[in-house]
Every structure is written in structure tokens, then in C-alpha cells.
Image 1 (cartoon, rainbow, N blue to C red):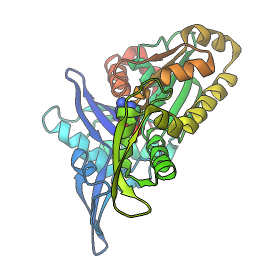
Image 2: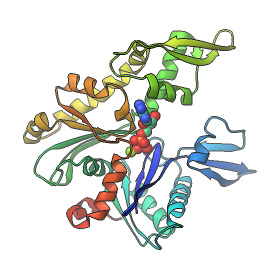
Image 3: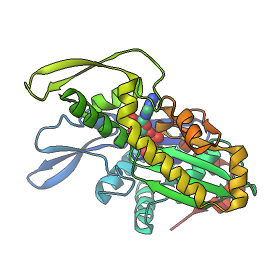
Length: 329
Ligand code: ADP
Ligand code: MG
């Protein structure tokens, strides 16, 4: 069993079956006079985000790429493993992919949660390495490969060679920050208050890194002056403007990575370029913008949302090839 424990989504891959679970990394917790218990996990919990009464909290335990709440994270991992596990093998070997920024304590906690959920053996793999394997990059070779994985809470930027990380950086600017930027922009430009879920929808349907389309898109929210519901029409000029700062920060981080890469590997990257994975890779024209501003060819992995999970599954499958890239705490 291979698990991609993402800040926004968790995916589980089984050897023979491919992706068998794909749910938001969200846990709904109910507080009964100080005694907390898990009410729902995954899809069911996500529908509760922003809509809970006082005693229920919908939590994203990995939101910023670090574990905010160990107990809730553990419950979530156990829940997902058991959900898949019930229908299949007993005591599976599990490979979990973790963000490069996670601490040894967090890694140990993730590993222990999986063991507590019934795993026979638990190994970990770095997220950008899993992404690179999923995108079929030649990471075992003496060639530079570069991954930019844009998830919900964090963007992972990494340069790899000979199966190891040469440079890695976890940036806390990713899909969630884009949603927040759209909320802020709508408030500033249109005096319109919208929620994060609406902002995410705008990003997916109308968001762009470079404005090229001419359609307009209706956005409903609350007018900040009158307090009543209102609808305005926005264009790609609006979303590009809203996301401009975030794009600049990402380009800056990519340039930092390039500056910190040994020259021989930089030379490889000029030809090979960088590969985008994670849900953020689906932002319209993000590849064009990164390519224009870094001068490198930019590729988008096939199915960027499941690339890391597929790569983790492949690393589990082909143990001999990838064994040096797995670790245990
Ligand atoms: P993680 O690995 O951190 O769980 P994912 O790789 O699953 O994150 O990506 C989730 C992020 O991708 C979310 O912020 C989501 O809004 C964003 N996303 C999904 N589809 C699109 C799209 N079409 N355009 C822009 N962003 C998208
Ligand atoms: Mg991810």
C-alpha cells in the first residue's frame, strides 16, 4: 500500500489496483464538554468546512505541511488505511510519502500511526522524489531533474540527481494561498466578501497566471457596504492580477533553487527543464509564466494531482530500483 499524505488530499495506491482512495485530508472533530472525538474524515468532513456549528471543528491537520495536531493526523491516517485495508490484504507493507520539510518527530509520528493501523512495515519517501518517479524523470541517473510540486499548503521545489535530493525547499505558498489571494482581491477591488470554497472554485474555473481568455465569470458574495448579497462579473485580468504576487514568489523560489544548484546540474536543467506536479500545476498558463520568467522549458506531469501517489506506488513496486530512496525511523 502506498500513501500520498498531502496537505489538501490523501491518495492511496494498491499494487494491483492503482489509486483506490482519493479524499481530502480533513477531519471533523466534535467537542463534547472538553471530550473530543472524530465525527467524520475525508469527503464527508470537507463538506463541513466553514459550515460547522460551535462544537464541531473541521480540521486540516497537515494544512501548512507540518503536523498541526498529532492526534488528529493519526486518526486520519488510521481511518484511511482501515478503509482500504478492510477490503484487502492483512498487515500490508506501507510506503508513505512525506513533505521534505517535515521533522524527524513528525516522520516518526506518521510511521507509528501507520503501524498502529495494522501495517507490517512502514517506510517513507520524500515527496519530490515520489513526484519525479511518478513523472518518469531519470532520477537514478547522474543528470539533474527538477520538480516543482504545488499542493494545497506547500510548494515543494527540488533538484535531484543519482536518486537523492541535491536541493529542496518547502514554500508555504501554494493552492491555499491562491484562494486567500482571490478572497482579498475581491474584497479590495469589488467590496465583495466571498468564502474560501468560492475562491477555490474561481481559481479552478477562471484562474490564470497570464490572462489570455476574454470570458466573464459571475461571482456571488456579500456586499461589504450594504451587507446584502451581490453578484459581480470578473475576467481573467482580475484573477491574473489577484494571483500575480504568488506567481512572483514562486518564480523567486525557483530562481533561488537554480542559484543553489551545482553548475553541472544547472546545465542539465537548461535542456531538461522543470516538471510541475500537484494540483497547482493545473492553474491555467502557469507553465507559460514559469518558462518565460526562468528561461527553462516547463513540463506539466500527466495527471498532476495523482503523480506523487503513482510515483510512491511505483517505488513500492520496484523495491530493488528505488530502495536507496526509502527510509525508516
Ligand atoms: P496536496 O498534495 O498538498 O494535498 P494537491 O496536489 O492535491 O495538494 O493539490 C491541491 C491543490 O490544487 C488545491 O489547492 C486545489 O485548489 C488545487 N487545484 C486543483 N485543481 C486545480 C485547477 N484546475 N487549477 C488550479 N488549482 C487547482
Ligand atoms: Mg502533494
